[in-house]
Length: 340
Image (cartoon, rainbow, N blue to C red; front, side, top):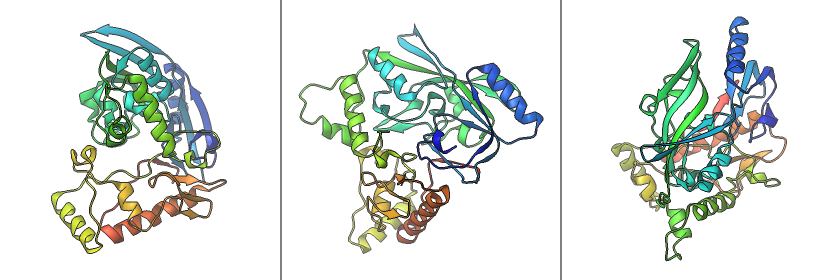
């Protein structure tokens, strides 16, 4: 499984199948059902940590292709196969002068994975543009279209990774974008990047800037860059209650720290997980055996070469425990853990 993931760890799948269409998916599900095998659905492999034991059942990699475009109600609708590379789709939209996903440039993985975690970055989330999700319903053994409201999107969350985890295999996602729309410029990093521009940036300029910023943080898959051998941001930004925020502020004052406030985070009462990690004694470039923390981004656990999944988990545990001890907050991982 390791070569099928961006982190590059994980043992073997007992059975593996690549699904290019609905029939492949149906046959894969039936194969697993008939043999009473556990089923794991794999997309681009960018947000998973596979155990060293691998997966004892069937890994079904969904690679449904295709991008179809139509216009209605003043919007441009894109019906996109779950196996389409996400960044290729973003580039396609920008080439069509369609706004709505430009800040999500450079995110690895496939289209089918984006609704699962409500993928977001630099002030945008896919929930803002998703109209519906076409999925195979394993429980009811049939295809179902779920409207965006049925997906219960929230910060890095949906029914696909919470209440109905394991029930649906995403075949297609429909997005509604705005042709000729203005680019989103809400995030501090992007505002600073374009601070010298008198005129507003174009969609193409936003995409280029996002990819540049991601590369600087090791968050763009780049050949030869060890910092990009990761599962992306490993921890979610904690969403605090009022009491938790008061306690965090108190602990920070004791250490003569000031809790940072970023507009993009404070809108949702989130605290920077990267700040918590770095102010718990972990520096960028921290090394622990064959794993470590990216030299460019405090939230990325990286495979420095030949790492085992157990080493990744050990570093994850160390970070979580020290952050909790220091700040009284437990960091929740973003990746999906497979076979543990």
